[in-house]
Image (cartoon, rainbow, N blue to C red; front, side, top):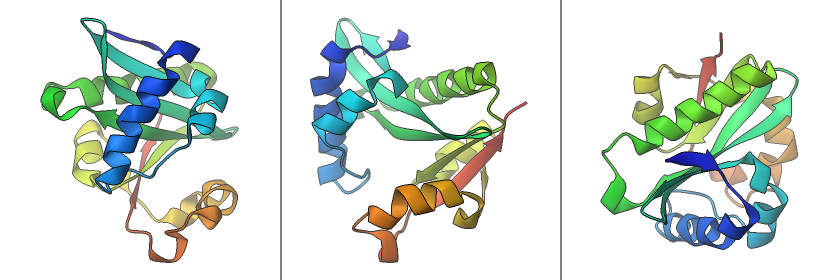
Length: 150
């Protein structure tokens, strides 16, 4: 079941993100950042356990980012990540957002959903508000993907 995250989910979201950050496949997020942005998050819950997470962060009147997309290894390959992305896209449509993007190490996943690889210069709001402060700014290997929302 996919639902909006609540404050009580923050520590589990943090733990999942930490696991993937340690593996180097996601950027780390502080627990404080998760609490501050809890309304951006969706969780996939199965039998009372959070098995997947994702968030939709609004950047501008027509631009939002899918962030912190992660599915626990034992739940991968079941379409959970795709469902989380689709839920984010649905919310973007409801908000009137025209473009949804992600920075990812797995562009093939997003391309199967309809995203296309683009240049980071298409997202100056992201680059100059967040990326510039990232320790990997000068050596970023994330690939930008974007979907035009109809």
